[in-house]
Length: 98
Image (cartoon, rainbow, N blue to C red; front, side, top):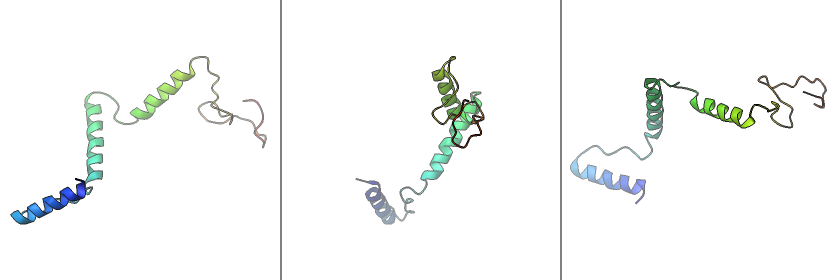
C-alpha cells in the first residue's frame, strides 16, 4: 500500500467518525527537514561543537591531509594554486610557471 492509498483509507475513516481528515502526504515534509536541521544545530551547540560549516570543515581537513606535507599546492591543469586561486601569469594562453 502506498501513501495515497493509506491517506484515502484514513480520510474515509475520519469521515465515518466525524473527525478532521489527515493532511495530504508530503504536505509537511520541508517543515520536518527544517526541524531536523535546527535540532542537529542545537545539539551541536549544546555539545560545544560549531553549529555551522562542519561538513565543509571536515572535507577541507580531508583534502589537506590527502595532499600531505610535501604537496606542491596546485590543484590541476588549470594552474590554480594557493588560497586566492590565481596563478599570477598574465599571458592570454595561460602558459607560464606558477
